[in-house]
Image (cartoon, rainbow, N blue to C red):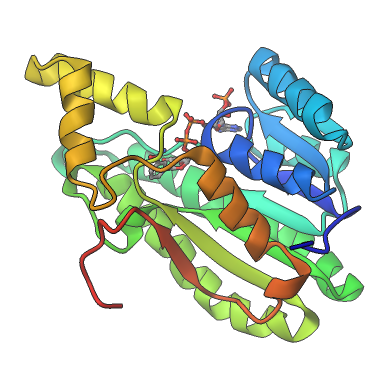
Length: 259
Ligand code: NAP
C-alpha cells in the first residue's frame, strides 16, 4: 500500500534509537523527509546516515534535548512546517511515590506531557492551514493498564492523553489527526536497561528477567521496533484521515480488557 506521504516533512522526536528510530525509518521508507532529534550527537548521526543509505530519504539531524525550550526551538527551526509530528522522549524512572518531590513531578510533566503539548501548539495551526497534518504521540501501555512503580509516567502521560482527546476532535475537520501509540514491551535499549536494573535488584540474571517478562506477553515475545514504526507510518498516511483521538495499544495482548 502506498501511504501517500512521499515528500511530506516529518519531525520525529527522540529518534536516534528504539521505537522513535523505527518510526523515522518507516516514514523515510514511505518517502517522507525527516528531521530527527536526540541529545546524543554520535548515535543520532549514525542512525540518520543508516536511514539515508537505506532509503535515500532527506534527513536533517538536530542534537538537542526536546524537553527544553531551547531544544524545541532548535528542532522547530530545522523543521518549521512539519506535516507529520511524532512526539517522544525518555520516560521517567520507576520508584515509590513517597520518594517523589514536586521537582520529580514537574520534570515528568515537562518531558511527557508539556513538551508534546508545546510541539503540538507550535505546529498544529500550520497543519490546519495546509489542510494536512498527522500528529502521533508515543505514550505507553501503562496509560491503559498502569504499573504502580511507573506513577510519574502514568500521571504525566494520562494528562497528555486527556488533552489530546479534546483537541483531536477539533482538528480532524481540517484533515489534521492526533493519535497516541501505546507501546507494551518492545525490544529496545530501554527495555534491556530496565531488565538490567531489575536483575541487579533481584539477584537474577538479566536473561532470566527478560524470559520472565516475555512469558507475561500473550504473544510469547516482545514487540519489534519495526512493528511499531510501521503502525506509526500507517497512522501518518493519507488514508488515515478518519482516525483521530485514538489510543492504539501495541502490547502483544497484555491488556486483558474487551475494550
Ligand atoms: P530508547 O531505546 O532508550 O530510545 C530513546 C530515544 O529517545 C533515544 O534516541 C534517546 O536519545 C532519545 N531521547 C531520550 N530523551 C530525550 C530527550 N530529552 N530529548 C531528545 N531525545 C531524547 O527508548 P524506547 O524504548 O524507544 O522508548 C521510547 C519511549 O517509549 C519512552 O518514553 C519509553 O518510556 C516509552 N515506552 C517504551 C516501552 C518499551 O518497551 N520500549 C514501553 C512503554 C513505553 P538520547 O538519549 O541521545 O537523547
